[in-house]
Length: 88
Image (cartoon, rainbow, N blue to C red; front, side):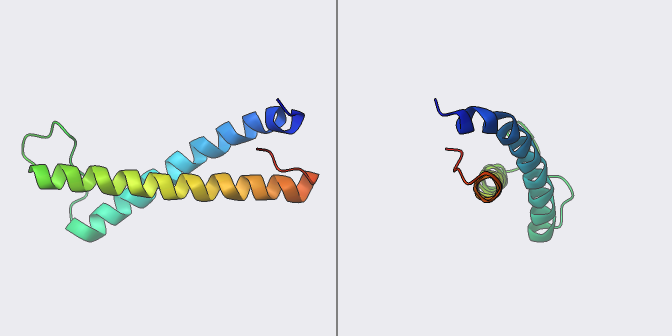
């Protein structure tokens, strides 16, 4: 394994955690804008329909994937700019 990849591991973990928090905030705001509800449904929320639960899960997954990819890519690009080596 390349040294740059090993050195980037802790940075990647921190960026991943930050991406998760950012994605959570973006999802909550998106859900509120789309539905007007403050809380998104959970899979076991008895008072919500299948459509609501599946829409919320799909939206949450899509937002998480996009935010994580953007944060990971920005972290790798910044690492290359600072060190001259791509961390992957």
